[in-house]
Length: 114
Image 1: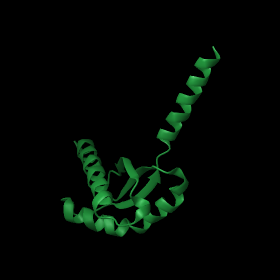
Image 2: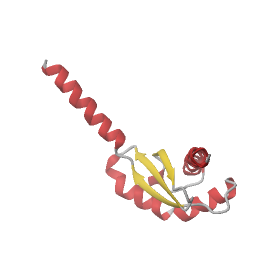
Image 3: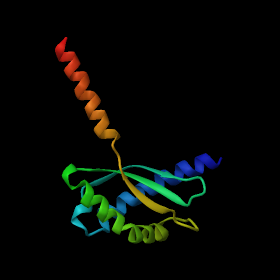
Image 4: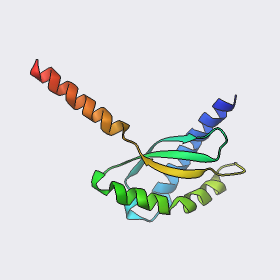
Protein backbone atom coordinates (compact mmCIF):
# COMPACT_ATOMS: atom_id res chain seq x y z
CA UNK A 1 0.00 0.00 0.00
CA UNK A 2 2.74 2.45 0.98
CA UNK A 3 4.65 1.78 -2.24
CA UNK A 4 1.64 2.85 -4.33
CA UNK A 5 1.42 6.09 -2.35
CA UNK A 6 5.12 6.80 -2.97
CA UNK A 7 4.71 6.06 -6.70
CA UNK A 8 1.75 8.46 -6.93
CA UNK A 9 3.69 11.12 -5.04
CA UNK A 10 6.72 10.63 -7.32
CA UNK A 11 4.54 11.14 -10.39
CA UNK A 12 2.65 14.11 -8.92
CA UNK A 13 5.83 15.81 -7.75
CA UNK A 14 7.44 15.26 -11.16
CA UNK A 15 4.46 16.90 -12.88
CA UNK A 16 4.31 19.80 -10.41
CA UNK A 17 8.06 20.55 -10.49
CA UNK A 18 7.99 20.48 -14.30
CA UNK A 19 5.12 22.97 -14.28
CA UNK A 20 6.86 25.21 -11.74
CA UNK A 21 10.08 25.22 -13.77
CA UNK A 22 8.17 26.01 -16.94
CA UNK A 23 5.91 28.77 -15.61
CA UNK A 24 7.28 30.21 -12.35
CA UNK A 25 11.08 30.23 -12.61
CA UNK A 26 12.60 33.26 -14.32
CA UNK A 27 16.21 32.00 -14.45
CA UNK A 28 17.19 31.54 -18.11
CA UNK A 29 19.48 28.62 -17.27
CA UNK A 30 16.55 26.58 -16.00
CA UNK A 31 14.31 27.02 -19.05
CA UNK A 32 15.60 23.99 -20.96
CA UNK A 33 15.42 21.40 -18.18
CA UNK A 34 13.37 18.22 -18.36
CA UNK A 35 12.44 16.28 -15.24
CA UNK A 36 12.90 12.60 -16.08
CA UNK A 37 12.14 11.03 -12.70
CA UNK A 38 11.50 11.78 -9.04
CA UNK A 39 12.35 9.31 -6.27
CA UNK A 40 10.99 10.13 -2.83
CA UNK A 41 12.33 8.23 0.17
CA UNK A 42 9.89 6.04 2.12
CA UNK A 43 9.88 8.47 5.04
CA UNK A 44 9.04 11.33 2.63
CA UNK A 45 11.97 13.42 3.86
CA UNK A 46 14.04 13.57 0.66
CA UNK A 47 13.32 13.59 -3.05
CA UNK A 48 15.91 13.01 -5.75
CA UNK A 49 14.85 14.91 -8.85
CA UNK A 50 16.54 13.60 -12.00
CA UNK A 51 16.94 16.12 -14.81
CA UNK A 52 18.26 16.33 -18.34
CA UNK A 53 19.47 19.55 -19.87
CA UNK A 54 19.06 20.50 -23.52
CA UNK A 55 22.50 22.08 -23.84
CA UNK A 56 25.02 19.89 -22.03
CA UNK A 57 27.67 22.63 -21.83
CA UNK A 58 25.44 24.47 -19.32
CA UNK A 59 25.03 21.42 -17.05
CA UNK A 60 26.97 22.81 -14.07
CA UNK A 61 25.39 26.27 -14.29
CA UNK A 62 21.91 24.77 -14.60
CA UNK A 63 22.38 22.40 -11.66
CA UNK A 64 23.68 25.30 -9.56
CA UNK A 65 20.65 27.41 -10.56
CA UNK A 66 18.30 24.55 -9.66
CA UNK A 67 20.03 24.18 -6.32
CA UNK A 68 19.55 27.91 -5.63
CA UNK A 69 15.87 27.67 -6.58
CA UNK A 70 15.16 24.69 -4.26
CA UNK A 71 13.56 26.80 -1.55
CA UNK A 72 11.25 28.55 -3.98
CA UNK A 73 10.28 25.25 -5.64
CA UNK A 74 9.55 23.63 -2.24
CA UNK A 75 7.36 26.62 -1.30
CA UNK A 76 5.42 26.27 -4.56
CA UNK A 77 5.04 22.52 -3.97
CA UNK A 78 3.72 23.20 -0.46
CA UNK A 79 1.01 25.42 -1.99
CA UNK A 80 0.09 22.81 -4.62
CA UNK A 81 0.40 19.44 -2.89
CA UNK A 82 -1.49 18.14 0.11
CA UNK A 83 1.50 17.03 2.15
CA UNK A 84 2.28 17.93 5.73
CA UNK A 85 5.99 18.14 4.94
CA UNK A 86 7.54 18.74 1.52
CA UNK A 87 10.70 16.64 1.02
CA UNK A 88 14.12 18.21 0.71
CA UNK A 89 14.94 18.36 -3.01
CA UNK A 90 18.17 17.17 -4.58
CA UNK A 91 18.62 17.79 -8.31
CA UNK A 92 20.72 15.17 -10.09
CA UNK A 93 21.75 15.06 -13.73
CA UNK A 94 20.18 11.97 -15.34
CA UNK A 95 22.90 10.21 -17.28
CA UNK A 96 20.64 7.36 -18.45
CA UNK A 97 19.65 9.13 -21.68
CA UNK A 98 23.29 9.90 -22.45
CA UNK A 99 24.17 6.27 -21.69
CA UNK A 100 21.36 5.07 -23.97
CA UNK A 101 22.66 7.23 -26.83
CA UNK A 102 26.15 5.80 -26.37
CA UNK A 103 24.80 2.22 -26.50
CA UNK A 104 22.79 3.07 -29.61
CA UNK A 105 25.87 4.54 -31.32
CA UNK A 106 27.93 1.47 -30.38
CA UNK A 107 25.27 -0.87 -31.78
CA UNK A 108 25.04 1.18 -34.96
CA UNK A 109 28.83 1.09 -35.36
CA UNK A 110 28.93 -2.69 -34.79
CA UNK A 111 26.13 -3.19 -37.32
CA UNK A 112 27.98 -1.07 -39.91
CA UNK A 113 31.19 -3.07 -39.39
CA UNK A 114 29.41 -6.31 -40.31
